[in-house]
Length: 455
Image 1 (cartoon, rainbow, N blue to C red):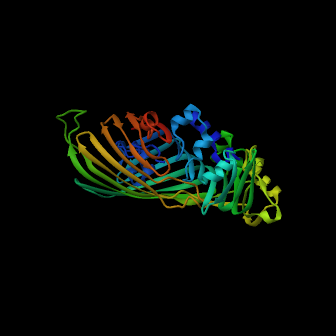
Image 2: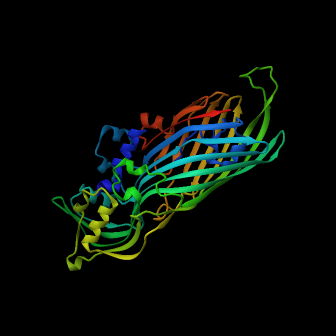
Image 3: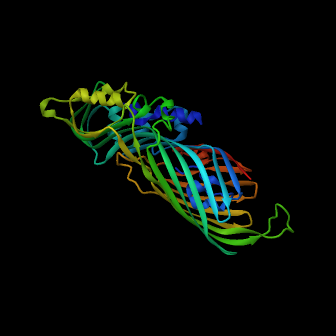
């Protein structure tokens, strides 16, 4: 059960392979398809007339308890994760932007892209309950949580069709709007939600039991994640469920323009148009997808363990669990679950967010950008995938063919992080947390890279 609760095996596997994704580069002055994933209105601002995106990947692992250095040292993760009084959270979030193409034509710009997503999360886990599940306390403890503890994972694919248009454009001001229509391909999903858990946990010589307990339980799964959540390959079934959903991004953009001389080409050249200020507002991930598979199920239960009748649930039974179906079977065999409702096919909402950003030219090639990501969904609901609230400030030195930047980020789960990134031509690489991970007690590790060609 402790494996299922933490998802640590899956997290460590993903780190070895490879929430503000692409922190710092996603608001780059070198505008391309990557910028349009934040705001589709940016597509008309592309630096080149045509762009081909080859490959872009970003992976973020964050939590609010364990530092990156503690993980690398192999310290007792269970004890660290369930320390203190604040609920424990861990998020793995990976995105892969596959082959994509975009072009400008007069006042219009159009794009076609493909994307794959992976999310694996432990959300608001009660630390006292966690200690009980990992046998790290001895005696009796009363659990009383008034929120929903979740173990949640999902994978899906998207194909996006984007369009952007200039609405107004003169020598000083430019307004544009854009939208992306998404075809959604749900891959696999699992959710274990335990809300309003109240009960007594006893540990006598390693024998851990839950008694006098009540809770509402949601168990849902579809596709490969029903089988084994520790097998990384089960998270890669991005398009396995076929076309079963639609989504959309919409956005607007404003630029305050100015003339400048491109000193990198020729200091005596004619002036070109650049922006002094670039502002954007977008709403992303509007939509839902329906999971359909032969093993589909989403069931709500009531858990009731009556101590007056001598009832208790032995929590040691969960130690060998490697799938959501294993956990469900143990609970069903106990006889303490009562089904309230359920369905075979179920719908999951995308993690809708509002993005607001501003990029300002301080002097010559020096810029600074501010970026806000605010989620509109409640992570406690069982029919949502998750996303984090993020605030990022990024100073950078940006030339025509190169860029160096340092993002400073406040994340909802991992708090403050600092990273570093660079761009050289169409290639870029960076991290939103590498600096704090190396020199401080950072609870986040992330990395991204990509390559695109402009024509």
